[in-house]
Image (cartoon, rainbow, N blue to C red; front, top):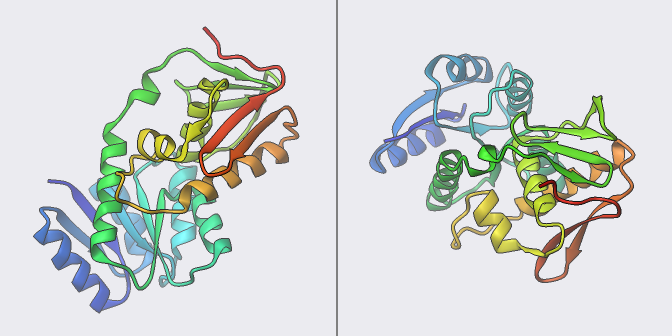
Length: 238
Protein backbone atom coordinates (compact mmCIF):
# COMPACT_ATOMS: atom_id res chain seq x y z
CA UNK A 1 0.00 0.00 0.00
CA UNK A 2 1.13 3.52 -0.73
CA UNK A 3 -0.25 6.90 0.31
CA UNK A 4 -1.27 9.31 -2.43
CA UNK A 5 -2.37 12.90 -1.85
CA UNK A 6 -4.62 14.38 -4.54
CA UNK A 7 -4.71 18.19 -4.56
CA UNK A 8 -7.52 19.10 -6.94
CA UNK A 9 -10.27 21.72 -6.66
CA UNK A 10 -12.60 20.16 -9.24
CA UNK A 11 -14.96 17.92 -7.18
CA UNK A 12 -15.70 15.56 -10.07
CA UNK A 13 -12.03 14.95 -10.89
CA UNK A 14 -11.13 14.60 -7.23
CA UNK A 15 -13.93 12.07 -6.66
CA UNK A 16 -12.98 10.09 -9.77
CA UNK A 17 -9.28 9.94 -8.85
CA UNK A 18 -10.04 9.02 -5.25
CA UNK A 19 -12.23 6.07 -6.32
CA UNK A 20 -9.70 4.95 -8.93
CA UNK A 21 -6.67 4.90 -6.63
CA UNK A 22 -8.64 3.31 -3.79
CA UNK A 23 -9.56 0.54 -6.20
CA UNK A 24 -5.87 0.09 -6.98
CA UNK A 25 -4.80 -0.41 -3.39
CA UNK A 26 -3.73 3.09 -2.39
CA UNK A 27 -4.47 5.02 0.76
CA UNK A 28 -5.97 8.21 -0.66
CA UNK A 29 -6.03 11.68 0.90
CA UNK A 30 -7.45 14.77 -0.77
CA UNK A 31 -7.15 18.54 -0.57
CA UNK A 32 -9.35 21.11 -2.29
CA UNK A 33 -6.98 24.08 -2.50
CA UNK A 34 -3.29 24.84 -2.54
CA UNK A 35 -3.09 26.09 1.02
CA UNK A 36 -4.67 22.94 2.42
CA UNK A 37 -2.58 20.77 0.13
CA UNK A 38 0.70 22.33 1.24
CA UNK A 39 -0.19 21.79 4.91
CA UNK A 40 -1.17 18.18 4.30
CA UNK A 41 2.06 17.37 2.48
CA UNK A 42 3.95 18.36 5.61
CA UNK A 43 1.59 16.62 8.04
CA UNK A 44 0.62 13.32 6.38
CA UNK A 45 3.88 12.61 4.48
CA UNK A 46 2.41 11.10 1.29
CA UNK A 47 4.44 8.77 -0.93
CA UNK A 48 3.38 10.72 -4.02
CA UNK A 49 1.41 13.91 -4.70
CA UNK A 50 -0.92 14.44 -7.66
CA UNK A 51 -1.09 18.22 -7.91
CA UNK A 52 -3.31 20.39 -10.07
CA UNK A 53 -1.57 23.50 -11.36
CA UNK A 54 -4.56 25.86 -11.12
CA UNK A 55 -5.70 25.97 -7.48
CA UNK A 56 -7.25 28.51 -5.09
CA UNK A 57 -4.93 30.42 -2.73
CA UNK A 58 -1.64 28.80 -3.83
CA UNK A 59 -1.10 27.44 -7.34
CA UNK A 60 0.65 24.16 -8.08
CA UNK A 61 3.85 25.79 -9.34
CA UNK A 62 4.23 27.76 -6.12
CA UNK A 63 3.66 24.62 -4.05
CA UNK A 64 6.41 22.75 -5.91
CA UNK A 65 8.75 25.71 -5.49
CA UNK A 66 8.08 25.90 -1.74
CA UNK A 67 8.56 22.14 -1.31
CA UNK A 68 11.90 22.01 -3.09
CA UNK A 69 13.23 25.11 -1.38
CA UNK A 70 12.46 23.43 1.95
CA UNK A 71 14.27 20.25 0.78
CA UNK A 72 11.07 18.22 0.65
CA UNK A 73 11.65 15.68 -2.14
CA UNK A 74 8.23 14.00 -2.19
CA UNK A 75 7.44 12.93 -5.78
CA UNK A 76 5.05 15.37 -7.46
CA UNK A 77 3.05 14.74 -10.62
CA UNK A 78 1.45 17.88 -12.03
CA UNK A 79 -1.97 17.96 -13.67
CA UNK A 80 -1.75 20.65 -16.35
CA UNK A 81 -4.62 22.11 -18.32
CA UNK A 82 -2.50 23.61 -21.11
CA UNK A 83 -0.46 21.37 -23.37
CA UNK A 84 2.27 23.99 -23.77
CA UNK A 85 6.01 23.40 -23.63
CA UNK A 86 6.48 26.55 -21.54
CA UNK A 87 4.20 25.29 -18.77
CA UNK A 88 5.89 21.90 -18.69
CA UNK A 89 9.38 23.43 -18.68
CA UNK A 90 8.38 25.69 -15.79
CA UNK A 91 6.87 22.89 -13.71
CA UNK A 92 9.74 20.45 -14.19
CA UNK A 93 12.28 23.24 -13.77
CA UNK A 94 10.84 24.06 -10.36
CA UNK A 95 11.24 20.45 -9.28
CA UNK A 96 8.11 18.54 -10.30
CA UNK A 97 8.91 14.96 -11.24
CA UNK A 98 6.36 14.47 -14.00
CA UNK A 99 3.23 15.92 -15.57
CA UNK A 100 0.00 14.71 -17.13
CA UNK A 101 -2.08 16.92 -19.40
CA UNK A 102 -5.85 17.15 -18.96
CA UNK A 103 -7.87 15.33 -20.17
CA UNK A 104 -5.84 12.31 -19.11
CA UNK A 105 -6.09 8.55 -18.91
CA UNK A 106 -6.32 7.21 -15.36
CA UNK A 107 -4.29 4.17 -16.44
CA UNK A 108 -1.55 6.48 -17.68
CA UNK A 109 -1.62 8.44 -14.43
CA UNK A 110 -1.38 5.19 -12.45
CA UNK A 111 1.64 4.18 -14.52
CA UNK A 112 3.28 7.54 -13.74
CA UNK A 113 2.58 7.09 -10.03
CA UNK A 114 4.09 3.60 -10.05
CA UNK A 115 7.12 5.01 -11.84
CA UNK A 116 7.71 7.53 -9.06
CA UNK A 117 7.26 4.89 -6.38
CA UNK A 118 9.82 2.62 -8.08
CA UNK A 119 12.23 5.47 -8.46
CA UNK A 120 11.93 6.53 -4.84
CA UNK A 121 12.69 2.97 -3.78
CA UNK A 122 15.84 2.88 -5.87
CA UNK A 123 18.65 4.51 -3.89
CA UNK A 124 21.54 3.26 -6.01
CA UNK A 125 22.50 6.72 -7.23
CA UNK A 126 22.76 8.02 -3.67
CA UNK A 127 24.97 5.17 -2.49
CA UNK A 128 27.94 6.13 -4.68
CA UNK A 129 30.34 8.07 -2.47
CA UNK A 130 32.92 9.21 -5.03
CA UNK A 131 32.45 12.60 -6.69
CA UNK A 132 32.51 12.87 -10.47
CA UNK A 133 34.44 15.56 -12.33
CA UNK A 134 33.28 16.74 -15.74
CA UNK A 135 35.03 19.76 -17.16
CA UNK A 136 34.46 22.73 -14.87
CA UNK A 137 31.94 20.98 -12.63
CA UNK A 138 32.28 18.51 -9.78
CA UNK A 139 29.26 16.39 -8.84
CA UNK A 140 28.94 15.20 -5.23
CA UNK A 141 26.34 12.39 -4.95
CA UNK A 142 26.32 12.25 -1.14
CA UNK A 143 25.33 15.90 -0.77
CA UNK A 144 23.63 16.05 -4.17
CA UNK A 145 25.50 19.23 -5.05
CA UNK A 146 27.11 20.38 -8.28
CA UNK A 147 30.04 22.73 -7.71
CA UNK A 148 31.21 24.98 -10.49
CA UNK A 149 34.96 25.55 -11.02
CA UNK A 150 35.78 24.14 -7.59
CA UNK A 151 34.09 27.05 -5.86
CA UNK A 152 31.86 25.90 -3.01
CA UNK A 153 29.84 29.10 -3.28
CA UNK A 154 29.08 28.52 -6.97
CA UNK A 155 26.49 25.77 -6.73
CA UNK A 156 24.35 24.95 -9.73
CA UNK A 157 20.75 24.56 -8.49
CA UNK A 158 19.40 21.37 -10.03
CA UNK A 159 16.16 19.58 -9.29
CA UNK A 160 16.21 15.97 -8.08
CA UNK A 161 15.66 14.58 -11.58
CA UNK A 162 18.11 16.98 -13.22
CA UNK A 163 20.80 16.00 -10.73
CA UNK A 164 20.22 12.28 -11.27
CA UNK A 165 20.36 12.64 -15.04
CA UNK A 166 23.52 14.76 -15.00
CA UNK A 167 25.23 12.39 -12.57
CA UNK A 168 24.32 9.35 -14.67
CA UNK A 169 25.60 10.96 -17.87
CA UNK A 170 28.78 12.24 -16.19
CA UNK A 171 29.64 8.76 -14.93
CA UNK A 172 29.45 7.51 -18.52
CA UNK A 173 31.29 10.26 -20.35
CA UNK A 174 32.78 7.84 -22.86
CA UNK A 175 29.49 6.33 -24.00
CA UNK A 176 26.09 7.19 -25.38
CA UNK A 177 23.24 6.72 -22.92
CA UNK A 178 20.09 5.64 -24.72
CA UNK A 179 16.69 7.16 -24.12
CA UNK A 180 15.55 3.83 -22.68
CA UNK A 181 18.44 3.68 -20.20
CA UNK A 182 17.81 7.19 -18.96
CA UNK A 183 14.07 6.69 -18.70
CA UNK A 184 14.30 3.34 -16.90
CA UNK A 185 17.54 3.51 -14.91
CA UNK A 186 17.29 7.14 -13.81
CA UNK A 187 13.66 8.21 -14.04
CA UNK A 188 12.03 4.89 -13.13
CA UNK A 189 9.74 4.54 -16.15
CA UNK A 190 8.65 1.16 -17.41
CA UNK A 191 8.91 0.46 -21.13
CA UNK A 192 5.19 0.97 -21.74
CA UNK A 193 5.09 4.56 -20.50
CA UNK A 194 5.55 7.29 -23.09
CA UNK A 195 6.74 10.73 -21.95
CA UNK A 196 8.55 13.76 -23.29
CA UNK A 197 9.73 14.83 -19.85
CA UNK A 198 13.28 13.55 -20.50
CA UNK A 199 13.75 16.10 -23.29
CA UNK A 200 12.54 18.91 -21.03
CA UNK A 201 14.78 17.86 -18.14
CA UNK A 202 17.83 17.77 -20.44
CA UNK A 203 16.94 21.23 -21.80
CA UNK A 204 16.70 22.58 -18.24
CA UNK A 205 20.12 21.11 -17.35
CA UNK A 206 21.68 22.70 -20.42
CA UNK A 207 20.13 26.07 -19.57
CA UNK A 208 21.38 25.98 -15.98
CA UNK A 209 24.90 25.03 -17.07
CA UNK A 210 24.85 27.92 -19.53
CA UNK A 211 23.53 30.30 -16.87
CA UNK A 212 26.62 29.46 -14.78
CA UNK A 213 28.97 29.95 -17.76
CA UNK A 214 29.92 26.27 -17.96
CA UNK A 215 31.19 26.15 -21.53
CA UNK A 216 33.27 22.96 -21.46
CA UNK A 217 30.42 20.55 -20.67
CA UNK A 218 28.04 19.59 -23.46
CA UNK A 219 25.08 17.22 -23.36
CA UNK A 220 24.93 16.19 -26.99
CA UNK A 221 21.81 14.61 -28.48
CA UNK A 222 22.50 11.52 -30.56
CA UNK A 223 19.58 11.49 -32.98
CA UNK A 224 17.28 8.54 -32.48
CA UNK A 225 19.50 7.03 -29.79
CA UNK A 226 19.98 9.16 -26.68
CA UNK A 227 22.48 11.57 -25.13
CA UNK A 228 26.20 11.76 -24.44
CA UNK A 229 27.95 14.08 -22.01
CA UNK A 230 31.15 15.53 -23.44
CA UNK A 231 33.57 17.42 -21.17
CA UNK A 232 36.65 18.91 -22.76
CA UNK A 233 38.80 18.38 -19.67
CA UNK A 234 36.66 16.03 -17.61
CA UNK A 235 37.12 12.53 -16.37
CA UNK A 236 35.28 10.22 -14.05
CA UNK A 237 36.79 10.22 -10.55
CA UNK A 238 38.13 6.91 -9.29
